[in-house]
Length: 139
Image (cartoon, rainbow, N blue to C red; front, top):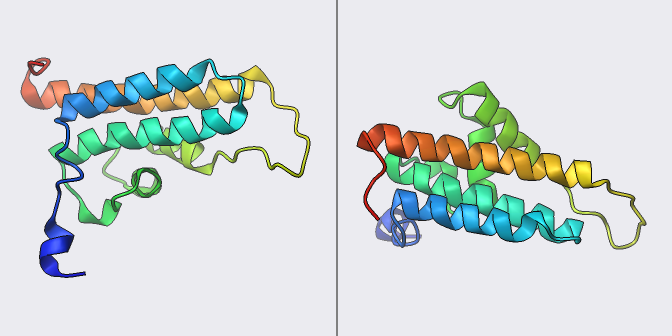
């Protein structure tokens, strides 16, 4: 990868920070009611990663990677983030969908906790966006 490719942030600037938060809220809202635990796990990872894209627009860190799961792994370890946010990111990134070869009983509570952890990450990013702009940025 060339230096120019490594510096290309077009994937990140597709939306503004608040736009990424909105996209994340839409995604978690879509999957929260899904009866499919695999869809909930994948959707929560995607939603939290989208929100973290918004944070990366505020505080770019190349080491966080480009994928949503890379963002979650990095957020779970980044000591600059509040401990509760790191814990929620870790919970989300470590969530495993049920394996197709095993029958697993999953309670709505388990997927509900994952959805709530995702909403917590999104809420933190939203608070950071508002704090940096002094108010909710215009749409």
